[in-house]
Amino acid sequence: MSAEIPIIARDRVSDRAKKTLDIVKKFVDEECIPADPVFTEMLGEGAHRWSHHPPIIDDLKAKAKKLGLWNMFLPKSHFKEGAGFSNLEYGLMAEHLGRSRVASEATNCAAPDTGNMEVLAKYANEAQKRQWLAPLLDGQIRSAFLMTEPDVASSDATNITLDIRREGNEYVLNGSKWWSSGAGDPRCKIFLVMGKTDPKNQNPYQQQSVILVPSDTKGVTIKRMMHVFGYDDAPHGHGHITLENVRVPASNIVLGEGRGFEIIQGRLGPGRIHHAMRAIGAAEKALEWMIARANNGGRKTFGKQLSEHGVIVEWIAKSRMEIDAARLIVLNAAIKIDESDAKGALKEIAEAKVIVPTVALEVIDRAIQSYGGGGVSQDTPLAYMWASVRTLRIVDGPDQVHLQQMGKNENKRGKEVTKELAQQQAATAQLFKKYSFPVKSHL
Image 1 (cartoon, rainbow, N blue to C red):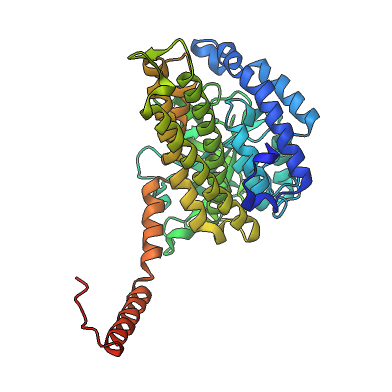
Image 2 (cartoon, helix red, strand yellow):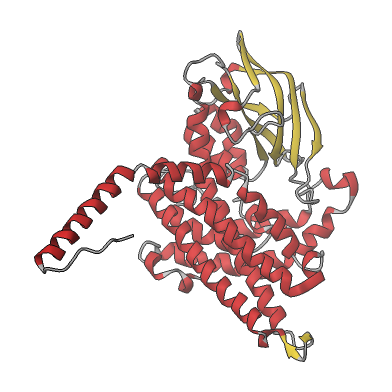
């Protein structure tokens, strides 16, 4: 895989990272992808799916640790707890992890734990790190991030209503959350919860706070698990959770009251490019499935193999170009984060967040179409891949929020570009006059 690093990024990737990339590729191709169907079968059916996790995951984790493939996501420029890679280097690794359902968890690089560990590593105090970050880094426990709410438009985080009220040495939480990914896993021991500690603050971005809530705290009720296009994603799951008079120590607040927006922006930035690079990996895997189908000699339509039909070859070519272009968008964002931080790369992160899922969905859809009925069935991974990637246009902020912000920022150049064009047109008029040519209307 190291030989496939885009040439514009190659000089920014260390020799150690290149060697690790090759190990990641081998581990995913030879261990994780073959384990994906086994993981699914081990889950079983019914309520049992939520009471255990397939033991094959523990076996893969042990192999990954032995290979040194552990916590690669924490960038060396901002965290001392990680494996010492840059965002760019991990982005290349995440692409390959995205080719398998189990690979990210096997290397302790799965969401939402990655984002939660970044929050704890960056914002938590030492006691909080010892209690929660250490076991997360070691893969002993898992976590969930509770932000989205069922009764408000949560894409605007100022709408969050969960109440966090101080009472003596405790905070009392009341409210409801849903799409709390990871909450179904019996290994999920800690929730990072966003709510309002100061709803009357005149600054709407200082009303929110993030607080740590152990999952077994009295008053926490998981009402149900949400389905994604019919998939329940067990044992991970996406919980609809109520918190009723949930009491936690005041020391569980992260960074301090009113710092919630600061925390979630720091959390979501890197997470968005992690999702994007895994989506690139999924698109690459879908393209492989499409090529395999096109070259299946036993599948002919109108007397021709699929690869002999121009439309199929065109799909393959377009997919190759779109994947390669999308990859460069993500790597550019990763480099920008490495050179500054997530806040300094807002435009680049938003570009990757919007473009990559759209490209991946198009590629996966072509692969599904090439398989006909089989493409939407359980006989290939394509249907599940499509469902998973489709959520990326919503999670971590819907596309429309990012597009609106990017559009507003780009449009700020209005006066500048209008002035520049007027100057250029005036210069053109002077040149016409100089060379005695009549000025023609540009309309």
